[in-house]
Image 1 (cartoon, rainbow, N blue to C red):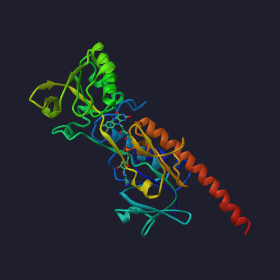
Image 2 (image 1 turned 135 degrees about the horizontal axis):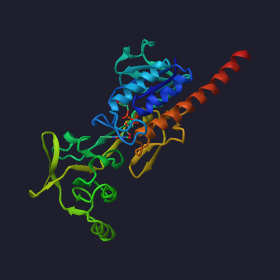
Image 3 (image 1 turned 45 degrees about the vertical axis):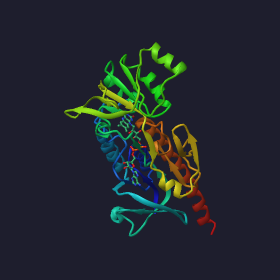
Image 4 (image 1 turned 120 degrees about the horizontal axis):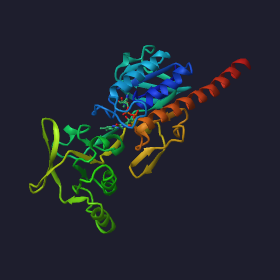
Length: 315
Ligand SMILES: Cc1cc2nc3c(=O)[nH]c(=O)nc-3n(C[C@H](O)[C@H](O)[C@H](O)COP(=O)(O)OP(=O)(O)OC[C@H]3O[C@@H](n4cnc5c(N)ncnc54)[C@H](O)[C@@H]3O)c2cc1C
């Protein structure tokens, strides 16, 4: 039985694994290898690694985890269930666990499976995701400062996204699409800061040589753009947590599994960290959350070790 199995080997999962490996725990990371930011070539706002590729960060993280004896395997966890003293995990590649014949057994679980982005269904948009189409201004806006930026509205929060992006450029066009038309104070705020409004649905996103060049609105109007920011629907990969009965909480970005400050869920022995439970997490926040969870899991294992040792000595 592993001391801890970590589902997901992105920034949160590897950070948790590093803590546990350095605590001399037997830790197994099971990872599909599709981190949320795999569409982009460089990461930003990651202290000490600003401008690094996401793939390089994770390759370095995997090497660090393995240097402390952590084991990393490529597979998907397809089911999790509680068993005596821990959890049993089913993998889609059964040979992925070097020790187990069948299911993988773990004393504690850290779920760090991240989330995926469901983009508006507009031809051409998905092809440019992470390469001209973005969501996080702190990650990607500096690279298009003073450029022509479109805000592809998807809901009420897009109004503030437009005002936020105005911090980086004077050329902001709010593409109403399926978002609200600004009215009242919002319209006054747009007018005061020179944010243009392009009403109506966006028909298609236009590219030349693989680069974003603009959008075509319903009715044929063309708008030239260098970048688009939008707020997609974030879909947490929380199936395993929900199947165990983890409590959830609603926030403005949806319904997420509830965790405490260390990432502990309502299920005894199960922690979660990163985008799977926190829609606002970026790479450094996910690394921090994984580290907190790793430390808390080790603490919990020590309590279990004490109980087991006492039970043994009192027999
Ligand atoms: C286009 C784009 C650009 C971004 N740019 C930046 C940036 O510049 N700076 C920044 O800080 N943040 C950026 N982000 C945000 C960043 O990608 C996430 O906040 C971060 O990846 C979250 O880390 P995580 O460990 O929670 O999840 P992830 O990095 O998504 O890792 C989760 C891992 O779990 C695996 N997994 C999922 N389900 C299973 C399963 N059932 N079994 C096994 N493995 C599983 C996945 O395949 C993946 O490898 C960007 C996001 C996007 C979409």
